[in-house]
Length: 218
Length: 275
Image (cartoon, rainbow over all chains, first blue to last red; front, top):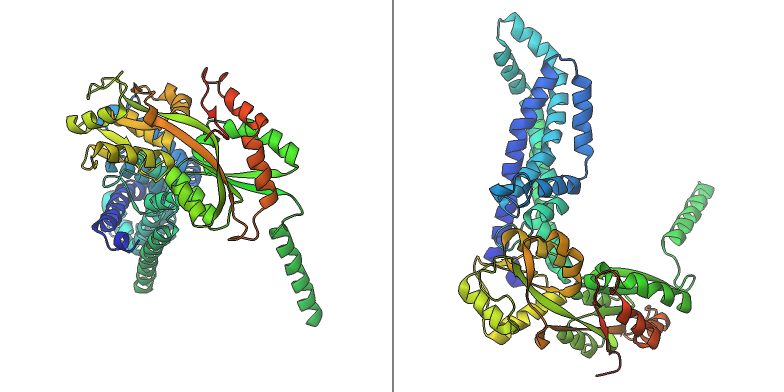
């Protein structure tokens, strides 16, 4: 077991986890923050419906998203030609879909708190629409960063969906959570616990970062 | 204050009582077994008649052979039904299992992509086929989860004298059905038990049987009771009855007839008491 814990293989698994979840969160952030800003800062007719849709999407179990992405990416599926199933690219897509509503909903509530006041100020200073939006996001940046970190910690701990879309192929799509599932299946509970501790440490670092962001903000 | 503590502690006692059903109140047998016996549906026809005979309830933990034996070593199961001879013998030799009993056998098949890049389809020699796949550089999907099927695959590679490595050897690290899906999507060869292959054949549109019926591919299942000397809490009585049922005439008949209607061929062949 000790050989595994100090092996380059484990390091690769950790790096792949961070890379896949980082990229997934990045795409989710671009989409989610844009969506959240539009919902929070503009008035349109179906706003409540869109929010209800986003909240439902957020409540969807990850394995359902995994199944949908699987059906989309499989060889005979509509996007099969891209060959993304059982690749890190496919995992990033699934994780981005999982995190997007979280980012959108959290961004919406973060901007709604501050939004109106800042918008009024910006308008009175003669700022255009895009300038106003950027000002609001900048003013609420700490809350938005918290949203991003929340999204990241959600996707890096995800297992079932990642297993389904990535396939848990050694040296290619095997990440921390799927390794834990596999080692448990093999009866190597010790390696599972060790990786669990690594995940806890990652989560701890993220949460400390969130606290730090809050402190700076206050 | 004192009455408060009394009420709280009795409430706690009642709660604990509910959470930990005393063994013996209900006769429960915990069976740790491989996914193949569960996923094919064999246990669904095997367990109900046993449960009514033994007046007990069987709880099934369906996992890989590796985890099944580990669960049993930890004393979390009463009896195991698994297929990995070397690990079984070690389990008994270490004192965790009482005795190994033959129950049945099934067989493995080597499946591969329809375009058959290694040109092995229809051959009868699985060792030769493994060698050809390795030399041709065709993809091979391995379960890589220390299940009975994975151990069998490794044993064949060892007999051929090859150590599969590199990017053409996909170590999937999942169950049989998931690994077959990877093989189908990526166009890889894959060693599978016949039951899982037949159960999922329809969705695996890119795969077909390449090599089968080589005597090496026979897969023996055995049943072992967990030793009460290591774990005094195990349900020895029900475990003994289960072994007697599986190796007896009724259990063996159910095994022989299973799958003929659903898969149009038998999946498991009873062999209790033959070797």
